[in-house]
Image (cartoon, rainbow, N blue to C red; front, side):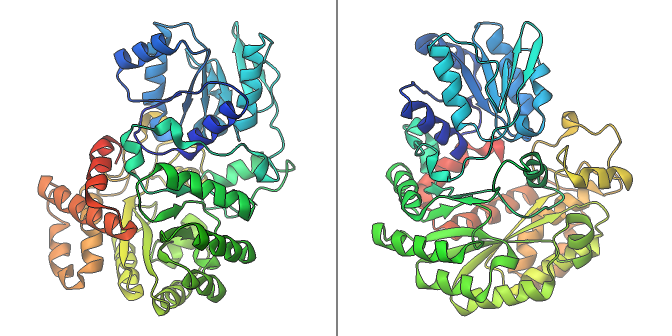
Length: 462
């Protein structure tokens, strides 16, 4: 596999574990230099080359695919979120196979077929192109129980800066919510009738997954990165009890506000939870309800914040600014709500419209995006400005640059409101990244030197 971003991809590590569990060889190259990629291909002589594709990187990946195909006649498969939602990417030159949905067992079947020199046109979840004809195979049932998936294998990242990250454990698959800006609703609808969408590894298997991450990554708090913690409190309580027996490392996790109940927070407080990441998204109930379809109240957010503070658990909030129909006053509502919640680590990004999501059509209908909006106009970063019509890009950019400042230093509001009207500049950006990195590192208790190495290696992909 080839990965252009030097970051830990759980999906890639699962594919590594799946391939090796059935006796196949798996190697990972990280980087975009075609000479290095080509030399690695020559040295390894792979039977197939794979990419895990997120929509924000798909153009860069297609460019690499084209350059590889100019030098090597090796089948190329694309998997991950983008081909799952847009399998027609198989029509692009150089792409031979796409994988929709979960990829572990399709990959095993594909590698078995290649090794045994059998046709692989009929493997479920795969679209296969041969001589211009495309076999569009149906989706297979979702893996359940999840323990059937081969154990994750992070060793493919050995020797890379990626392992300067904290240990990552992805213990739950699926999300029951339908936010308009997320691909989750569409993937859930795709799999309707194919099994339970939200699935947990067993406690025993989860401990194995965590142990594998601790073995390879920097000695830092473990990050539970699944979207659905809190949907099964009995499982969570048992998991954290067993977790406390294998390591003294603290942990952090994500949670939806609706799931952060008294019982949820009580369970976290029994163990070494250092941080909870909470999606505020907007301080305007109108924006959350009408634009994002996140139907919880500011009152609930305040209650969750009070519960966490009451148990001494710090929390980070995720916030999005520059949304369709959002006013500057509503952005300030988001800032003020974070202050009222006494957010420990506020984080904000600029809204990035992703083709195929419900919010894009809303934005087109309201005149915030042109009707021909596509991946070709997709911004490269959630920190670099807005592409929406009707919004002042300079003001949105500056509101991002000073969002965290305005939350953690409320006395700065008069100054921030003045600076928002100034043309964005290098000093504003430098201040933003300084505050962002400081809060990010502090929230996850990362050691300074590994964190600096990780940031420098990922600077292009901020």
